[in-house]
Image 1 (tube, helix red, strand yellow):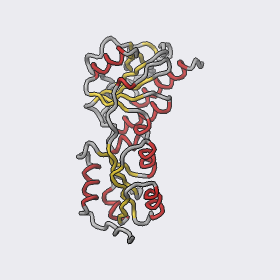
Image 2 (cartoon, rainbow, N blue to C red; image 1 turned 45 degrees about the horizontal axis):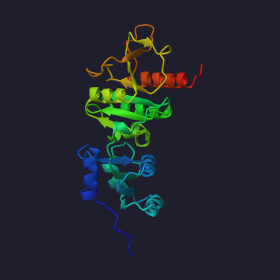
Image 3 (cartoon, rainbow, N blue to C red; image 1 turned 60 degrees about the vertical axis):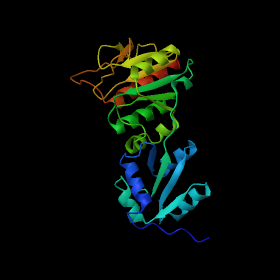
Image 4 (cartoon, one colour; image 1 turned 135 degrees about the horizontal axis):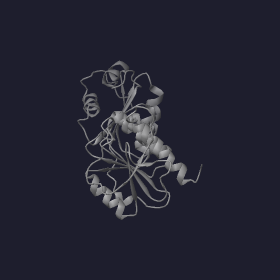
Length: 261
């Protein structure tokens, strides 16, 4: 069987489709650039549409084909014109977005810690938040619609694959999600810029949901009477970057829950 011809035209339908996905115009399809994200998606069991591999990466193309993936070889310079990165990694996959998950699938036990994100607009911040959540062993990440999408190219890249490894629950209504989680035994706590309980003195035990808001610290109205935690700050600093502050809170939660000093 003769090999398929190498794609050399930027007008090729597959390359045009890849551009649409990278531009956010195909909501149910992910564009994953680079070997790490592609391998993470494969291990997560996601459905691959096609992998576009640079002509000069023949060994990688052969490897992916041996794993049963549909591979198309593309002229390296042409593939680089499609890429959103300054330097193309020479591999771009189109993958069906993960199926929606239900909050009912979250098991509430003493070690369950969930990160809920509402209103974070920067996909890089969203990705960084997911990395911290995975690093402390979070059971899931709840993302409220209206902010950055967890499936955007920048969020996925910023998460270094965490958004493909940690269960993600996308919800449309923050108050409804908070009520459902509370009804199932989760205790909610809100990250608050100032005026909350010192995060080092808060009781982090039990099934917990840490709610973090937008880069300005604002959370959606209607979340109910959540406990509030704050990070004491000296000087004239008004606030920390949302991913930095959340990382401090998450790691303190893990330390406290493990009984470490």
